[in-house]
Image (cartoon, rainbow, N blue to C red):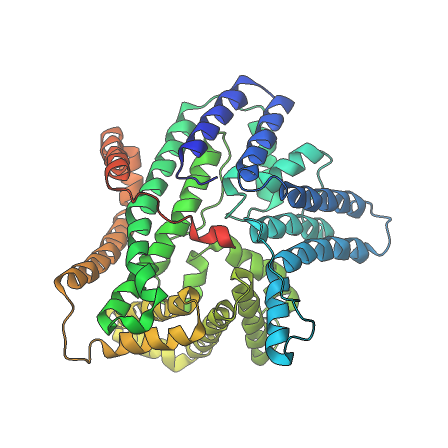
Length: 469
């Protein structure tokens, strides 16, 4: 069920009526039913996978709670193997078999397998697995309510594409929401988030998608300026698309008094790659930091070990995004950039140089960081790795070709620059906070966004990008 659909609006309204019309366990039942309907709209069968993950981790959490229990690591291992086993089979089995056959040939004739990828499996397996790990580490106490735990795992606003919440944040909020009085303020804030997210999705992201699809379907058939426009368009598309999902998810949760974490914080305005990952898909970045990078040793060892840990973490992050080599290389590309930044920033001469350059150095750092991210998106978007070479080569040659972009292309490039400038001004001036504090300004902004969504929104736009992960 898509967020930008009438079905979702009806589900949300029905959920609100049932939620505030009941108390306690009745509200739990409403949230469980709403989550089942939301996910079942894609596939009722795959609801069983969520139930398996929830049942295994709920049981493991209870078993881990016993201080006298020996070999607790075996219980944790059962949780990790179950979750990664489900994720590995549905997401990576076909990729593994295809690569084995590419190397060794068709060892077993007809053995190529095609498996339907359950929506959101990468998100909810990480979320439920983090619960067991946190219980094992002693960071949280396990819940003894299976229904509450199932809501934590399957909460429909963030079930398919996050943010990936921790049990320490979400479970207490679920408990509080069961006895929460109706709040007009929560409904108002939640509605604003939903409207703003819908605007970013159907007015910006979906229209950008139309500029992207043709060029990336056949990169060799277009010139450098078209490749440049398409790549900038995807840069806006993936940000507005994914941040829109998170915004709608946060707004939907806020309607029932639950506050999900902020998943994006203007990532295209940062001045180095480390900060990019602190502002982009924050919940996933923190997950990999706490459950992969730190257990590998983090930055506690030598510089070489730290850089190796960082590279391994980004490799796994790339693989998490998809069972394809372009995602693996995208993760490694960012790993190399993070490695180079760590080496560069550790030098005393670097700090001296940046101090002397002042604002000019900051501007150049932003420009370089932004365009390295843009190049990375080429790897993320292409269907074939050879297309990445074609696209990047065309982009590099465009300004050197002696030709100028068409009027429409120049207008779009100016619009991208305007988007970044307005974003920077809004961040510095705290425009969103000021508008939300003024009823008149809020009515104007969100009313305009709603009208634009209804009038200018792309019809039959693509589904949210991260639904495939």
